[in-house]
Image (tube, rainbow, N blue to C red; front, side, top):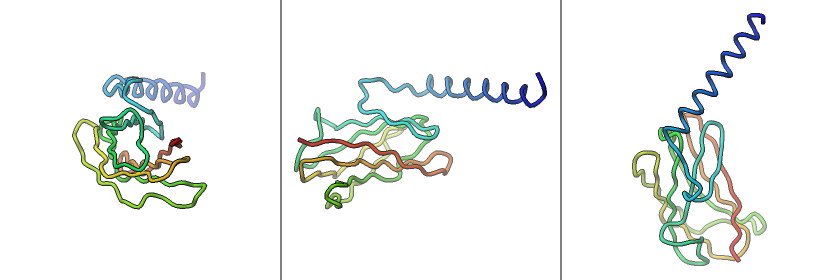
Length: 135
């Protein structure tokens, strides 16, 4: 192998090792809720004390971030088909070890909602989204 190939191989091995170590240090399980993955960040979210997002009732989310040094910096939700969002701004509370409580969400209409979770890792912001259909 030439020097460039050796360097690329070493970088790939190091990245794979770092990813495995990060996953082992912060495991998210299927029972932790809905999973989303971004650039170096994985999160799981679930509705607190309910099985599903309720229609026209306040609710809260538990968000778990991996790696745990990632920060949740904002949460919002919109209905793209109707070109509007929530009438309330949720509050964020850090619970420690990568866990966050998002309080004050209310989805007032049935239909498709786009949940937006703004996260930051090493001061690099990114947006993770997931569509949720309320019957």
